Image (tube, rainbow, N blue to C red; front, top):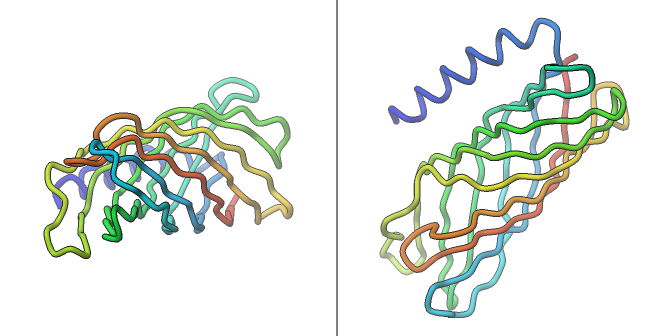
Length: 178
């Protein structure tokens, strides 16, 4: 809980200064999560949800810093057992805006584990926190205050005991307040 409060305060502090002259909003969407096991056991990708807030502010002409705070589900089915890990993500990406309504971004996300559960009764052990996945995406506005954010995320290496190399693709509906 301490991690959550510290991250929330720091992001809100950074973002509130950025809100005066820059874009910010909320987004909610779905993601398709996949991953591997160290043992080579069969895995089945699962759908998860993501929601939260974001802000981006200019650093030089069309270059922006894009950040935010998002609740992210990272589920995976391993040998018919559903494993669910939930994180608080703080993305830090470099955004290039082609126009006011479109841009691409890339960077990392600092993902702090909130909980980890399994249908088998034994929760995953040694969950990596913070997890630092690479993040690449694009956003497109189809209305001045509405748009879509699509992204790819890759967390190479250990995620928890026996779980590794998580990947996801997702699409979020954006509502902006610029």
